[in-house]
Structure formats: C-alpha cells, structure tokens
Length: 365
Image 1 (cartoon, helix red, strand yellow):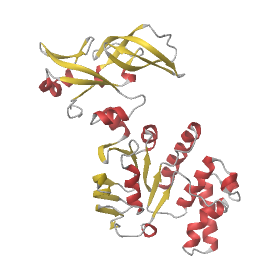
Image 2: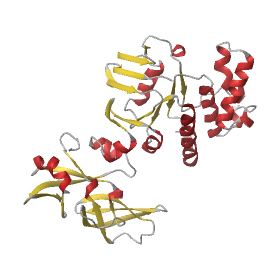
Image 3: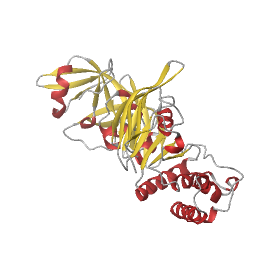
Image 4: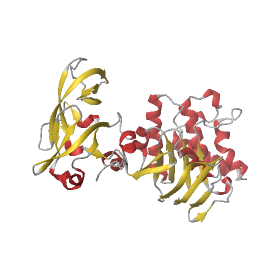
C-alpha cells in the first residue's frame, strides 16, 4: 500500500490546459474517486499517475518516491481499463497470469497467485474460458484479477463499469467495494457517474474544466456543496436552482422566490446570510427536500407546485412542475396520485437550503 501525491500537476495539449495546477493527497489504503463530466480532466489525471501520459509540469509521488520520470511498469501500480484489454486468444487463466510470467515469476507461484485471485473474485470455474466465452461482468472480473495478482501499491480504475448494463453495474460496484475492504490497497477510481462515486468512495474529488471544485466525503459533498457546479452534479435528480431575493424582514430574513412566495430563513442560517440581504441570489433545494412526504416543522415552509409531468419510479414518484416562474423537480411518495395539471401542496425543508451567489457561483456559508 502507498500514498499518492500530486503537486501542482498540469497537462496541456497543443498549448491548452486540460489539467490546471492540480494538487491532491491520497491516503494509504484510501478509495478515492475522481468524478466529473466528460472532458474535465479526470482520466488524463489518472493516466499521468499511471505514467501513460507525461505531465507538462508538477510532481507525482507514489509511496514517498517521485515517479515523474519512472516508466509505468516500474511504478508498482495496476490499472483496470474500461475496455477490459484482455488478450482474445488467451484463456482467463493466461490473461491473469500474463504480467507475472513476463516478470519471470516461477510457474507454481504464478498458479497459486492466479488461483487466489480467482477465488477472491469468484471466477474459479471460468479460468479455462477465453474472453469471447465470457459475459461483460466476467471479463471485468478477469481484468481485475490481472491487477490483483500484481499485488501493487496502488490500483487505478478508469471507468471500469461503463460498458456494463445497469443491473450489472450495481452488482460490480458491490464487488469492487468488497474487494477493496478485503485487500485494503490504495485505489483511485475515475467515473462520470456520480452514483458510482457516492457509493464507492472514501473521499470524492469533483472535477470541472481541469480543476478541482471540491474534495470531501460523499456525505460532505452532498450536504455541503462548495459551488453551484458541485450542488448540481452530485445528487440524482440534480438540485433545483430557484432565482430569489434575500430580504430583511424585521429581525429575521426571508427568501422571495421569483414569481412566487416568500419563505423564512432558518435562524441558524441568518448570521451567514445577513450580509447578503437585498441581493439577487439562487436558492438551492434538492428534490428530496421539496416533497409531499416531509412533516411540517419549525424550519419548513409550504409551497404550491403546478405539476407538468409525473414520472413513477416505484418507491418514489418524480414530478416536474413550476414554483412561480421556475421549473423544478420534486420527489413524491411512490403512492402519490399526482397528475399533470394538478396544483400540489409541498413542504420545503429549509434547514437543507443553500443560497448561491450567481456571480461567483459559490455557495454562501
């Protein structure tokens, strides 16, 4: 196991930065997830750690050793790719064993290492099959087995579940998390899927346009996003952003929604928000904090939704509609009888509200 350190790492293609001065510390044994939209620089960052891309500037350290000029094969890392990257003419056993054989390990040691990895991954009965005889999930297990037998300091995962169907992705997420708990090896995982990030990570690094927007535990980035981008990217469905004005109301504060009602600001939020009284801001509320299932309480407010569209999803029902002049998404009970055209009473949990400065796109603390 090892720590990984990126110090002001930069990568440019044809004079254009795709990763801009990124600094990051990955703890020994941590499962760190880099998440963000396509083109944000997350895979390029992973490839620089692996040595498959040269950094334009900065330093990369693995296990206390600077590896900027070290060949990928000598960095003591193992990488699992999106495309599996298996040799089609080899059996699963031979694919897993290939790296060990290339390094000259004794035959009996190779056999034992492959059998141990296969037992961990539950693919003992598949070792004689070739990749064409395996399902997508089985191929990905073989690819992970090839990484496991290396006993590396760091595992690198580059969107390994993207080629799988939805049900198999859920199953493989569970397998990867169990594998990390069992092995305890430092892991860095890249995905554009925020659900994968939330379910797998010890910590999440949210990236946008080659920069880090926020680093934190899944609970931290969900409950306390630092920017509008993070607030909108983490959580499914995305957070609602409602134009509003923050108004002083006697001793308290209220938020006046564009084209709609005014709601009170919880007392606990007033010290942070008062310097912004009189400003045009954005109110952020997640669909689950704007619902027909929330009980009335001291930090809640009643609002009315003009329903445009209803999407039943089993345990939940998602409704799209308008609060005043703004279209929002809300999470209703799965048994909800709401229909398009209804005017629906909702309760907003204002203890979970966020106010965002539209000029800087920073969440006001």
